[in-house]
Length: 360
Ligand SMILES: [Zn+2]
Image (tube, rainbow, N blue to C red; front, side):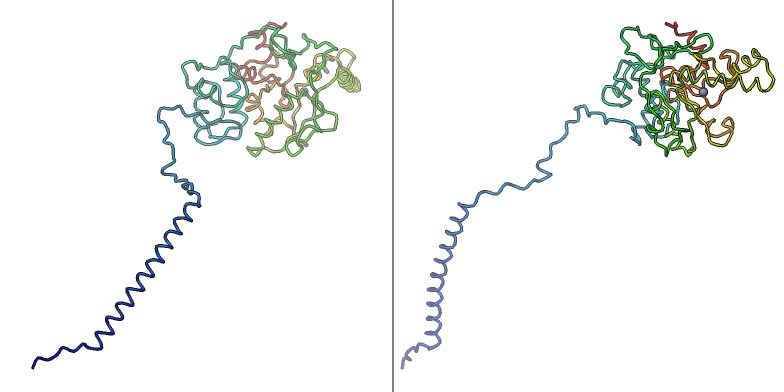
């Protein structure tokens, strides 16, 4: 007997489940399609986001042939570029200080001197023009014979002749009573008392010289030479007369005759009108309570004053020329364009002007 195939109840359940799944799948599929459409619609409303900056994509490749602008080097700069600058200035004879990678006042003075001798803006800052000149064929060795500038082009300058040379004030070259400094400042108000003590409250000086003095003493501080005093600056004719008369009187008290007293006085005190202090460019620099001559301050100034435009005006070796006993404390401002050649050629002011300046 042919056995009739029986449909298993399990099969029915399985088929029902399959149908149910299919229905569900269709339903879910429709929902998913709806959802997709909604997302598409929403996307169409959302603005396209701007792509985020990608350094790798956006970076502009530098052109290796484009000239790189030289970095500006100035007071306060330090490091390799300053080393290179100092070495270059030294090789050309403008810089005589230490090659230490520190752009201090001495480096600045050398840069100014270089700029002055190459028709550049003498601002003491090494920008593109100065930098290019420094390393060009046109860069020449320092010229130690200054060429006087014709008078009409010069504005009135403190303590300079019309030809730009420093004024000579001595017994043969009296300063007229009417001489007036250009811009006097009261040093007790003007100077930083952390750098220098100004003796009394009445010492005046030409601003240009006082500025140079402060730069110089600041540099000394940086080298740990820190105690400084200014005991004299600008002196009027009246004050010079008073100093002279007081010294004559002191000698008379010691039994000198009138002419003996005056001649003894002349060895150490300038005749009225013959004092450089009248220019406002000369300072007596001292250390309170000690004889200046043997101090480290005196030694430092004798070595470095030139780099800041000052000269040690009365030295032992030039006594016969200046007519004054050596004064290790007396410094006269003439500007670096003159102080450096004077140092390098070993000339006192009288000799320097005789060689290079006509005193007009
Ligand atoms: Zn003096």
